[in-house]
Length: 271
Length: 274
Image 1 (cartoon, rainbow over the protein chains, first blue to last red):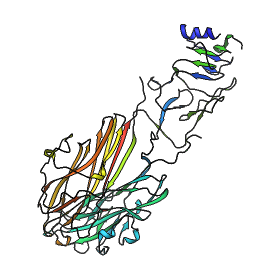
Image 2 (image 1 turned 30 degrees about the vertical axis):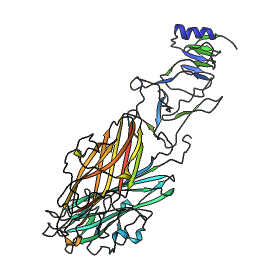
Image 3 (image 1 turned 90 degrees about the vertical axis):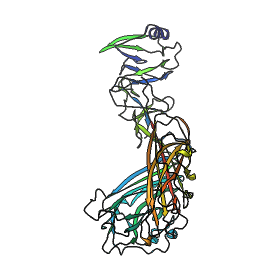
Image 4 (image 1 turned 135 degrees about the vertical axis):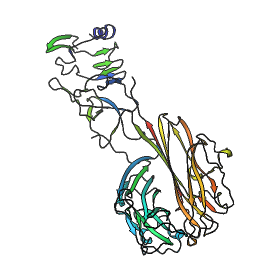
């Protein structure tokens, strides 16, 4: 019998429109094998959409497409893991249209910015820094070896008049805080120009390394540091417009958090 | 073992054998032993019986071995998605930061007056500008797939101090990305101080570069960041990138002016063979 089928299948070629049962008299499919199948070559699947044959690549998995369709070879959307390399494990992004504003009386008194603006300093040390409401968020770190990347962008505006003989400007700063501790701070200066109500786009990138495993809170807080030749009644807006030459959509803030890790947690993926 | 081939009518004609069957092999080692490629044009069903058709799985389930003697099962994955043919996938990211910056651009140093650059300019060719590296941002990595995108993102604080606090002075500068010492990305920018003497001529500024380079060749790559001073309105102005100028009245520090550099490598995914 082995020889008969071997001859049939290999030398003549066998094309059956019938159902074939191997070790069963009542096949329930076109080929019904009541036992083990040994594949010595590739298992090829036909893609119904374009009729192409897929042989699968290294590490691809056979994925069901349900009844009536051949399964298909797919790769998991997980990194090709290599030891000691960083992979994007967590990312999220947020936006805020509320922003915050500062009057001239809301400027901190800072004796030395270089001494005050230091890494890991607690937000309680930053008087007159105000958080942008929608950007206070939480994120998770799953590995003791990680690099966290923050990107914050907003629009800074002041309702300045046109520039005069002596420049008018405001120094401001925005800090990114993790668990209320400073991880990045950038300063900027908004100058009066040859038109009223000037604005600028502030883009800020910060990195934090090896945060502890677990949940963390992150927030962005900004401050009006000091005004130069600024008359009374001028308001500084961060992430919000202080004049109707722009609107709250143009001036909104966005904030992106990416956590890159050397993976240490490997979950079972099937259930 | 019966060695009989049945041909009988079950709606259609059925073929039945009770022996081990070899296809392309004379000594089968399993009930069905296929010595060649096998093509599935329809579903693959598992664990059927003589009365019950096997389980074809539901869309997205994967075939998981149950070990010796038991048929594999279609199982669902927890919160893991699949790559689709023809997508770009984030392979690796490289992040670095630096607080040493560049302090060799300060007062007394003229700009190089080079306003143009081309892809491939060598970092050592002074006719293409007097580039100075930011040492802490060097990254070395290997690319394995020639269909890729390298996305560079670089940000640094920039500081200047005009030579006269009541004069607005400016410095134009540029920062670029060098891969294997050849220029692949560059952006120019300018920092201007105010003429308000209360500010002591000090100005802080943020420089950001975003750039994508397609189809970087397979192999080992060294990626570095370098900047240069193009022009200065007064050569006595102090100027520094990624660090403070020499006398900045404690208005900033290396932390607020630090440089950050991120490289994302994304690769094209394809599996089709014909």
